Amino acid sequence: MTEAQGRGAGVDDGAAAKPSMRDALISAAFELFVERGFEQTTIDDIVRLAGVGRRSFFRYFPSKEDVVFPDHEQCLAEMTAFLDEASEEEPVKRACDAARLVLRVYAADPSFSVRRYRLTKSVPGLRTHELSVVRRYERTLSEYLQRRFAGRPDRGLRAETIAASVVAAHNHALRSWLRSGGREDVTARMDHALGFVQESWGRPREEAGEGDREPEDVVVVITKRGTPMWRVVQEIESCVEE
Amino acid sequence: MTEAQGRGAGVDDGAAAKPSMRDALISAAFELFVERGFEQTTIDDIVRLAGVGRRSFFRYFPSKEDVVFPDHEQCLAEMTAFLDEASEEEPVKRACDAARLVLRVYAADPSFSVRRYRLTKSVPGLRTHELSVVRRYERTLSEYLQRRFAGRPDRGLRAETIAASVVAAHNHALRSWLRSGGREDVTARMDHALGFVQESWGRPREEAGEGDREPEDVVVVITKRGTPMWRVVQEIESCVEE
DNA sequence: ATACTTCAGGGTACTGAGTGCCATGCACGA
DNA sequence: TCGTGCATGGCACTCAGTACCCTGAAGTAT
Image 1: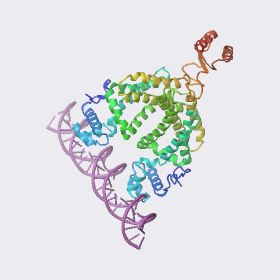
Image 2 (image 1 turned 30 degrees about the vertical axis):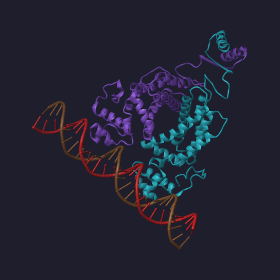
Image 3 (image 1 turned 120 degrees about the vertical axis):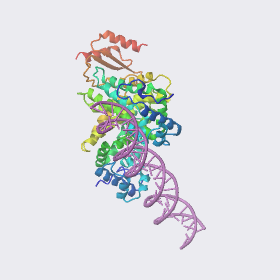
């Protein structure tokens, strides 16, 4: 029954393996937060309920806000590792798959995620804190993309813009699922949302100066319907023959 | 000499007109922040230097962080007003122009902006606070776009994703300018960055089911370079003649 | 077994941000 | 002159976060 979430509820790879204290703090905190609100709950309330010393709280969580997002540190590490693996995949696709790792963590414990969503939504301080968490994912994606875009023009601009798109689309799908109470299918929404950005960025329109496919072998013509065909042919030839 | 920035340094439309106290606090705060650091400066230090009572600080700024971003509240209001005006312009273009309003505020006092940038960059708490400020611009843009996208599929997804792109591109150009110390031309960078997202989102690739311009009067042909011209003509005609 | 180290945890006191409450002083109109 | 606002200052309080030190339960070597 709402045992917090036992840290990711799936992976228990060697790294962390001290269950009792940390988890006791998490579940005590959530119990109080949902009962009387985040700001109405003091650290002393939490440690009293968890039956530990006050100082210990700050040994496990750097701030009161962090206890609300207990698994993001590990999730970020997973994403970083995922993006450090060598892969032949198209970069934007790869970034979208990295975003799916975050979804997986949320989907692993829907009830916890939904309660946290409702809590976060109603507490400005938590929203701000969540922004800083999300920002780290965005930076990770952006740095990955910048690496993969080596040689392209506007690497940085591209990378940051696309990373922001991916995060925004991911969050849109995730939040719409959370708003529905965690029922219904997340992955379908997510596939749709990420497919949207992948469509838009995966293959840029004009200067497709890609590394893994030649740009020179594609010609794009845009013209008004009704243009005389000789004008179209002229235009194409003037572009090709140069 | 670094008189903070006298609030936007241009528009003094009726709304705010109490100069002394607020500005004294801003310049006192910055003086101390750059001298000994943000966290090493207490509210008491600031009010002592400004020669006002401690309680007055919190009358003008809800938190210590807010004194670093004194003009964003007004800028946000400007953006909101700008987007509330009726306009025939293409929505993404309009959103980009709205973002330029923010740039204008930064560019109005480059030395202040650069000092603030350096300060913010080095203080995690300020970075987080800035995120929450930026997020409000993003929401404003997103809500505008969602209004303009009425009737389209995926309104919300589209609006949030594009808003995030616009903000990311804007911030990329802005920060690169700030990193350069406020020298060089901002508007050129900004035009380039915003042009990039506008190109990408302004006219969606496949379903361009727009309301304010007909999709039927544009033909797009994509072909391999070297394709015999008769094949191109055939393809175009088969598409037009249907 | 004794002495030594290590380390998770508890306790206490302190700093500093942010808030509530009230007193003060100054302007305004009657 | 007397209210009636309003801006400001002065206090006292709560609470997050930190520094410092104490305890006790392990181990480990001799």
